[in-house]
Image (cartoon, rainbow, N blue to C red; front, side, top):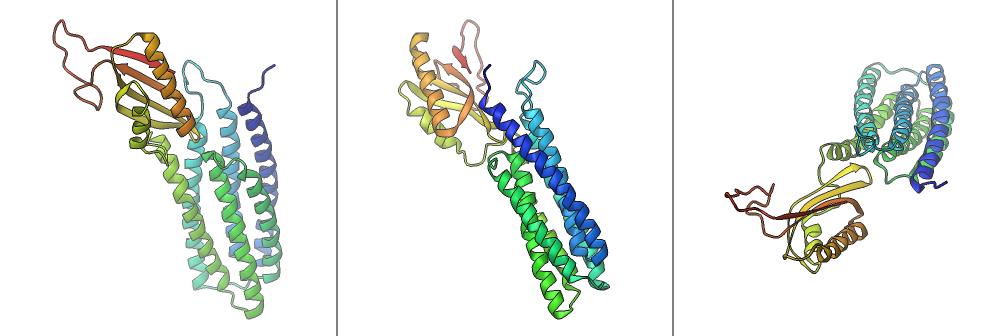
Length: 313
């Protein structure tokens, strides 16, 4: 039996996500109980933050399952974008939760509430250990935008719980209870900041924008450097998933037998795979240069044809 490396990676990722889900759920319960006992908005904010983490991990786990499903006649590219969609939803939930935290913090700043600093410190310390451990586990899959969304949640929580520890110490030393809602404002800012990048990148993939870090001019130059290639136009590069890129283009070549053009196609594909990690390509060879490069639309007079030779992979 042949086992694909991607299947093994998905199985390992799924196991990590399941473990993370269980630990996060236990910590959420701890935060809610401790937050109510200590009257700490910061701890309750952390519970809300960790709830979004739980949902993020849950969606990421579901997306990993969907991504492992094979393509079908109705889903010819499979379910790679399930993870991207999960990342986008995670980013939106982060934005919403940050605004809610600010709303609650504003009310607390107007009417400060006495908090138990000792409970804040110990519960937050447990959170630093838990979120840090989960972040390290997820860091191995950081190239996947789906897992990166969940990873950003965990890193943000690790930093914010560390801030709660510092705040708890300051409250214990000074008795200034307004520090608790002030910490919540900072947590909200951190949550919002972490969501911006993941929303932008996931939207770029969903809208089929050029993948981050790829320059069309550089790709065009690399293809044109291949012997036998005269020109490249109608070039499009987009992402199917976070690390699965596709390309389509028209390549102008001299009139030659198909056996000779096959070697050019092979060279183009090798360069795209090695230098840009683009493995899915649709390359159309043409014997003449199109008059309109964008879209390759030209008028064809009666009795005159516009020769193409198409190759796909």
